[in-house]
Length: 440
Image (cartoon, rainbow, N blue to C red; front, side):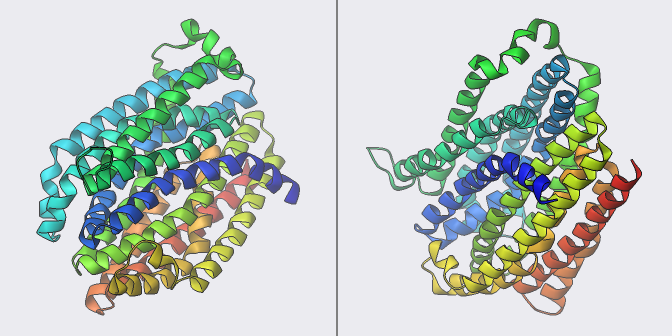
């Protein structure tokens, strides 16, 4: 089992670094915005809560590309993999444009979510810029998922790492008004993110187009690069449920964030700090999930049943260990970590208390993400979608609301709802994988 986990880690490590780098963009924004004003940090929280839902809904098609590419790769079918690249990129780009336009045209909704009016007003320019940035982000994601499916994961990782200093530098210019640019504050963070995402998307597209590793897939473009109804159906068959799974999870966190906003700007800012840190640890688990999904899909394509189960069990075990380590670190550093994002003592104190609850769901958060990935590698997405809906929307959100507003536990009640929902999701998803991997 250790041998299989080592192989999964080898694929997953660049994916983990890429994911953490993408979260790093959000952490950089939060840290630099928090240094300006806590209400601007609360405004960024409001925007991220909304944009995150749209972002993961759009990501489904791109994420579907990696198992389909991995299955084609396992079957040594270059033509099929090239079809997935073209049709996946085209579909992801169209979805991204549709989502961005929809978000821009509905920006007035920011004023109808029960938030502080000053916070909502500060959020509008940042919201519009992040909405436009979803287009290059999903273009990058689609090409990245193709590369990941072929197990070439280091290129996207390198670009993701480069995006951090680029974004920090652009933020410094636009947020604080350097080199003659006006001081844009929160909107400056949005502009920095937009430029950064376009830059790394263009670079990755050029690399895939020109690099010799990918030439077998590019060379047959005249034969393979056509709109293919079957490929679109496969992408939608995996992508739509994947979007719903991640969308329901992020929507649950986002709706909870909006409910926390009803408690005031202090609670909302504290929630965003704790959520940023929890998201950073989750991204490592998500990378492990993607690596496991790619390896399971490859074994699924070759019909190697014993290997498939061994990969899955070892990945779940690794997720358990990782979650435990993260939980311990959150508890040990709960008073130090918030100070990285705010100098407001009240915000830091509330955030510190929320990190205790974040520690409680680290194991279930890691393993439920892995369960989704393993099942997706087997093309099993319908039941997992139902499981996630039950766990978050019939268990997690109602429990959080009841504890927060009926038992008056405040933000802590919402976060206990997270613990309950994530635990239910983990049990349901991993039980299904263990059962299905015995039957195939």
